[in-house]
Amino acid sequence: MLLDCVIIGGGPSGLNAALVLARAKKNIMLFDEDKPRNAVTHESHGFITRDGIKPSEFKRVAKQDLMKYSNLSIENQRVSDIKKENRSFIIQTGNRQSYRSRKVILATGLKDVLPDIAGIHDFYGTSLFVCPFCDGWELRDRRLVVIAENDRAMHLTKMVSNWSSNLVVCTNGKNIFSQEEVELLTKKNIKIMVDEIDSLQGENGHLQKVQFKNGKEIEREGGFVAGELKQASFLAETLGCAKNKMGGIETDNLGRTNIEGIYASGDTTFALPQLIVAASEGSKVASGVVSDLINEDF
Image (cartoon, rainbow, N blue to C red):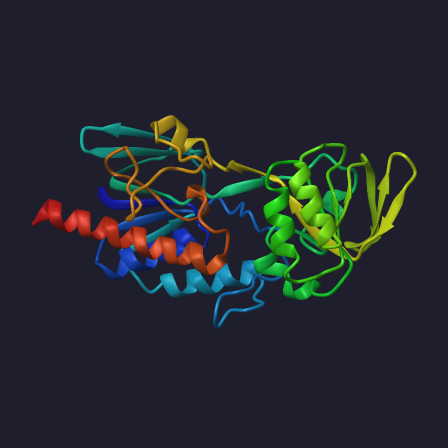
């Protein structure tokens, strides 16, 4: 059977793409490995009518919406390879099944690689986060830390300052700020600590202290981390998809990549990492796929 489109990734982008394609009467299949970037998150925010929903519940409700479309099937398995064959694609899964599709949407997302600091994963998702737009309200006006070892430090610090004026930036031994940035942060009463971090201390996921290797310590009630972002899947690279300056998959305004028939949406393009944005990206890219399919068949 030749499918119209295969969607790889069951996050908000892939799920919304599936909805749009299903409603356009296309025969589609969604592959969901169920290893979401927000697996540690207790609540998702910023999505009207769903503010504060648990990510797993969001996915459950979304899949419930999709189940009424008989032209859509969902496979809970990993895609291991994609090969282009003439004007279609062969999709192979981890259990050695093969599917053929005219179009493929990569909604495989990103993964956060956190700094190598003892205890950081004990607090990630409860009192340490990566996106202030998603979780800043819950930490508003508290004593916060920004942990950053890369060139995203200044941008993240500026953003976090919107939710709390009581900030300390810890660079874990890295001199990443220019003199101009140091002067600006000092003027804003934001302390910079270049000292190497020994560990993070607290209870039940709630940060209490940052302990440094030189014996110093500071009391903090939560914070944000500028981790490294990496593609969660190797499929785009295997296919030869071009990357943008940020390391995301490069696309046009309807999600088309440089490989004809391959589209990308959501976090994998380094779009703004918010639930509602990812869902919107999925809808937009799916509309592009539908338009391309119609034009090819007309």
